[in-house]
Length: 524
Image (cartoon, rainbow, N blue to C red):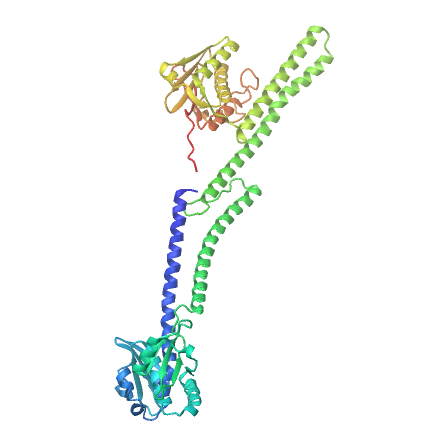
């Protein structure tokens, strides 16, 4: 995996994670602000409605003023918004957060606004409810106390129970506080909610159990966060996969078009595509297939033409054998047939070699070999075959020092041999093979003193079955595959072959250039 693509993907994941966390935190705070406001009003509602339903609450519960700043106001005395006044007129309990605590209000049936202020809403409301329960239960005799406790529990939204079992008595600290104040607030170690221990004047102990406090991590909130976070993640994944799917569909569409015969169809590539490497590889494959199909068509057409001449000559020779009048005429026809068969064998060898190179190349086992030794071997072999020409190797000492190169010796030998043979075919008398080797590259120039190649045909000569003369014989025109094989051999060596004009000899100069050492592939 490319490091740039990894960093890009990693940055996207980090950004997506940060976005989900930020969104969940904002949602958590927003939802809980509404939930807490609602809980505050519902939690204080039983206390406020009890006070509002009590005639002369200010006189009866005057002691609440010293604890929780109990006030009775008219609606005109409120410094509150119209929404608060409207909600109070509907009989709702309103809780406002102020700089000195929670201000809880309710409007009585007489139109008065009753207001209490709590520092810690949960604990202060619990103590206020305990004081009211203690005040009412204090004047109830023991026989009717259970009934009164039941009525208070239902009206105040709490649970009042008498403590009879010594094991259910809280610890000594709670008892010490209740003996001083008459009430003591404590937390139950197992239930996690507030309890108030009330001591009546006759010494009876009453336990007031409050509803649980506000829980910001309630399961509906967690479920909402999970659903929202999962939805955002699913949306991001959907968008990402939609892009990948779109890119894959583009590749699929091009593949279908190629299957229908549109060999020129290609996938558009850009840096923003997640499958850009796949698109590039697919386009390379499509180009290779298009080239192979073109080569196959050219080869079928050319091979059918090249085979027709020797086959016709063989057929003619066989017919002449039947009418041969003497042994000399018979031998002449047999020699001609043998030459034609040799021509067919050479043509088939050229075609198979070219086909292997065009269809992906042979399995090259590059090894360190001396390029100068290969050049000398080719020159020696060709000089023995073509004695009418002077074929020489031009190798200086500096090139000899860099003779070792990573090559496939057999195919480099074949490439140089094809060029030397091609040069000798058209040379007047001389062919020179010049080596120019350095630390980075190998270059071999094969020059001749023949007519040369017209500049407008420099690229055409490397095309399969292309020949610049009108001859179709072995001795002059060849088969038109030799130079195509040379170019493909150099391609699989990472180099190139080209033609120009020889300044020294005046004829053609065919050049081979390839890297001296195979590039070291980075480990993944």
